Length: 170
Ligand code: FEO
Image 1 (tube, helix red, strand yellow):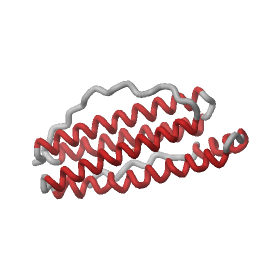
Image 2 (cartoon, protein in one colour; image 1 turned 60 degrees about the vertical axis):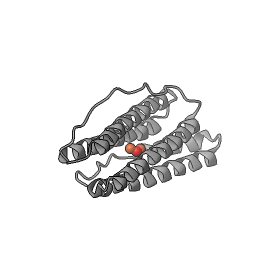
Image 3 (cartoon, protein in one colour; image 1 turned 120 degrees about the horizontal axis):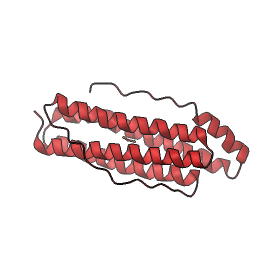
Image 4 (cartoon, protein in one colour; image 1 turned 135 degrees about the vertical axis):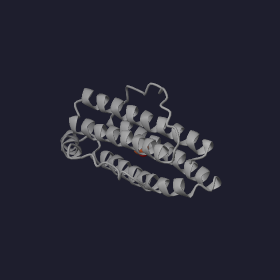
């Protein structure tokens, strides 16, 4: 059975993952409002990914005979200055999430909870991938500058993103 300390920490992270989901859904709505449907679609997939992260932790808690607690969420931001502003905010947000995941790993090690440590390694790798992907998008946006044709093309490419559910177990 999982320790109370570890259970509480996972429940906090489930809340953080659901908050991320709401933030990205809010970003998707903003991107629709500035006529970038491909980028809005990309952000909608990001939303789905965050829900799947929360679900993965929820399932893990149950598997370890823990108790998942669903909590309320703060309202996410609704307006941004530009598409570049959105992806910079996304990068910063993912860096914060990486810090939270690292703290969870630290706690698992301190608690000698090897199962949680192994489970969390998927999230450690996921964070590397998420930060790298978003950094690439920021670089692309900076290269485009004020090119409307370039942004139109990029928006079409962003529409290609598909949701891949994470593996069900550890
Ligand atoms: Fe759940 Fe974007 O990390």
